[in-house]
Image (tube, rainbow, N blue to C red; front, top):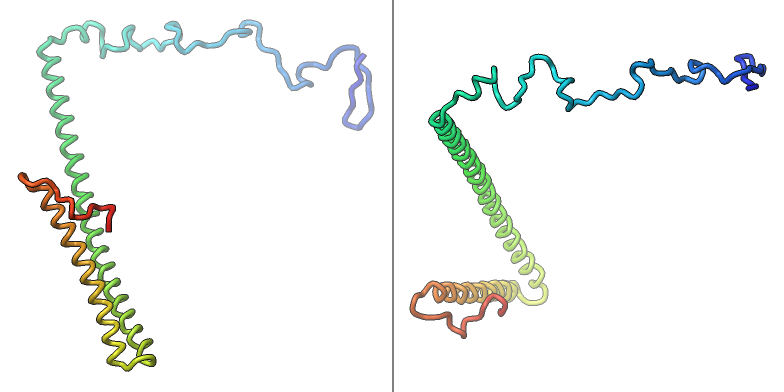
Length: 184
């Protein structure tokens, strides 16, 4: 005996388990029990599908192509691939060129902004040093410091240029008195 609760909340006793519809389960029809459709079973294939999926059309049509036709198709496919690859590389080079032009423009703008910043620093240093030394003394100090920095940077660039020239010279090996990238 199993007790079940009604909608009103009263319990009733029944002799058997609840019906499958009350449990929410419906039994499968007897002919479908254990049957799972196999998509790879040839018996489940559509009627219009050819027996050999590698052929197009009737089976005898796929077997009539000659070796010459196959080679012609292969050459045509190779030509199509080469044209597609060439167009891809042209597009890629165009895109890279456009981005390189934009990058170069941004570098030019950055150098101009840096130049303005150095000028503002120089003017600021002249104004800041003017109370300590005369205005002419502060101008001389700032201009001298900037010329010294410019001379050091130019000297380093000349040394690197000599090293590059020595690397590409056929007769002479690179000299040891020219500092390499790690030395400054």
